[in-house]
Length: 262
Image 1 (cartoon, one colour):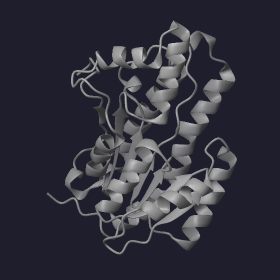
Image 2 (cartoon, rainbow, N blue to C red):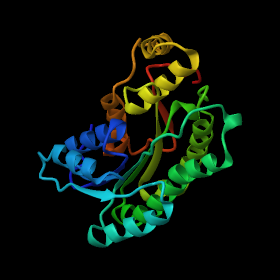
Image 3 (cartoon, rainbow, N blue to C red):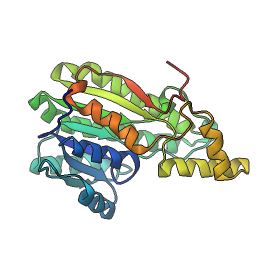
Image 4 (tube, one colour):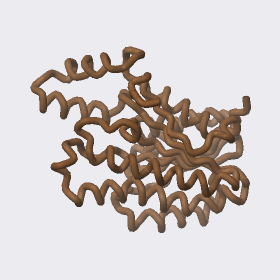
């Protein structure tokens, strides 16, 4: 099985923590040159120093705040004038605040749509020409199992994840003929800062301890535990590899079996 990504360049968004950081590490282990993309320069520099370089890779970082969509295009284009190669794009942005969908403001929907769908569109439009040139491209969207099965209390997130799913399927249909695949990875309950915040919110709303909330969630997971970021990253890395060339337009839950749908 060919998992070698030597000579390939991967842009990994939200890569200073959680699943994004784990994905950057896994892709580097397969030989890819990594461009870390996030908004905190201090954290970017720290992760950059941690990335594997056993195959002589050159890793870089790109400072972008996805809440400022007017800056994304200019920053990615400026970067590409110096370093034009791009073969892999991992779209990954922090989820919106939780709460019932009926209580969400229109501004929150617009903000979240911009940070997820519009940001992914801008980055994809900028990187696809390089992918077409080399006849190899991988676009991976880290979303949520809420795309398949809406999560109670995460109404805005569920809505935007659905939009990303249809956007990705459209891209898969259009770009497949160029050797470019587009897929979604749907994390479930994963041991990240995001899950901790959501559990704290649930604990506050139900007057339970965070530990009680966690145990209730774990009971819903067939494997009996939360998923580690590295486990989700391994799926992402496979989808980016040459071995996954025919996997296109799919959404893969990495949730220990919790999602009820097929």
